[in-house]
Image (cartoon, rainbow, N blue to C red):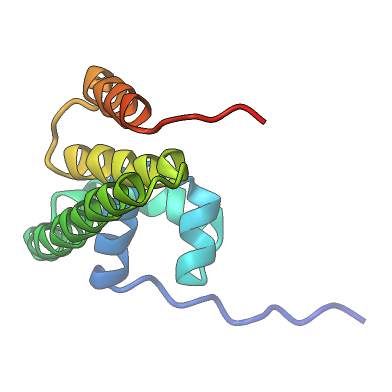
Length: 140
């Protein structure tokens, strides 16, 4: 007996393609994007390399809306991370590295979505130096 061919999967909507584009700009892999959207990594790659979708004005409009929302969210998270970093330092707790890492990730992703370079690692270095100079270490 011959196997039945399954129905072809549905094409991604323009909103899904816009999400793929934004997630790709954030540095997510095709596989990761596919998992988030319930698509195969091959489908994600195909649509991200499709000029027809990338130049579609409706898709570009959706991308701009998603990009703006993501930048707002990342700005909020970065601000919360900075506030938490100050709390930890004021309390004398030394979990500054984790908080600084979240703040740095938000900063880098905001810059990626804004089309700006992420090569400003000096800022992160300064934050680390200030954080560690502010915390007193005691030896056992």
